[in-house]
Structures are given as structure tokens and as C-alpha cells.
Image 1 (cartoon, helix red, strand yellow):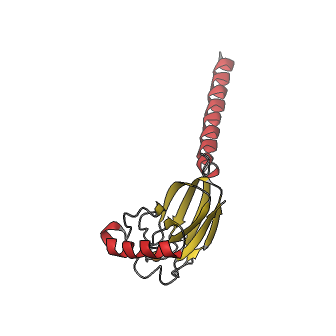
Image 2 (cartoon, rainbow, N blue to C red):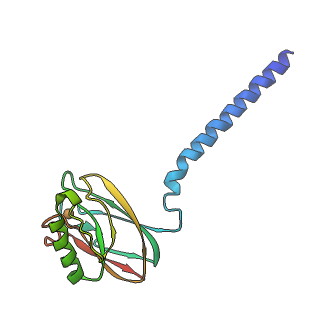
Length: 158
Ligand SMILES: [Cu+2]
């Protein structure tokens, strides 16, 4: 009788240990599997407080591309807008973005935009996933004055 109670208690202890182990393993999964789902993942930030992206050049393979933009500035807001084409297209989108105003996060309704984050607060992040064909894309921040200051870069998909 006494022996039976002991083995029952031992069984409970083993079961609890298994549950705890399973929970610990499960908690580690999201960080390890963050790039799952088939989309290639790109990370971009700002060059600290500078009006510049870091890195300024990105490459990806055609297909679904997930871009996570982390605003590395303390307080300055930025967005990450991807357009198909070069500076000629980016300049037009920038102009339309400034005209769209703060209420729209300086993001215009523009057919040249293929991906965009929201206007991101300093220290915050936003992600966007887009299906991209091979080609050369330009990304920019449309917050007034930032594109002109050089807040832009190139994404090459090949
Ligand atoms: Cu900006």
C-alpha cells in the first residue's frame, strides 16, 4: 500500500516535469521559427538618429519577401515605402506622400507603391510582406524632408 502511493507520487512528479519541459520547448519555438512560412525575411533599420536607412542596399529572391523595419531613432517618426523603379519614381511618390499629410502617415495612394509600413514611432517596428518579381526597387521614407536628405535605398530582387 505504501509502495503504491510512492510510485503514484513519482508518476505525478514525472508527468509534471514532462509538462514543464514541453512548455519550455514550446516557448522557444517562435524565436527560432520567426522566418518560417516560405517568405524570405529582411531586416532594416535607421542609421541611428541619421536620416538614412541601414543597410541602404538590400537583396532578395523573387517571391514573398517579409521586411521588418525597426525605427532606430529615439523620437523621430519614419516609414519604409517600396516603389518599383528608381529615383524618378521615388521622387514622385515622396511628393505625393508629403501632400497626403500627417493624418495618412505621409503615405499616398499611389500605384507605384508595392509595399509599405505605417509611419513608425521612434524605437518601434512594423513589418510588411509583399510578393516581388525580379527587378530593381527603391525604398524611401516619405516623412517631409527625409527623402531629400538621403533617406532612401535600393532593393534588388533577383
Ligand atoms: Cu524618415
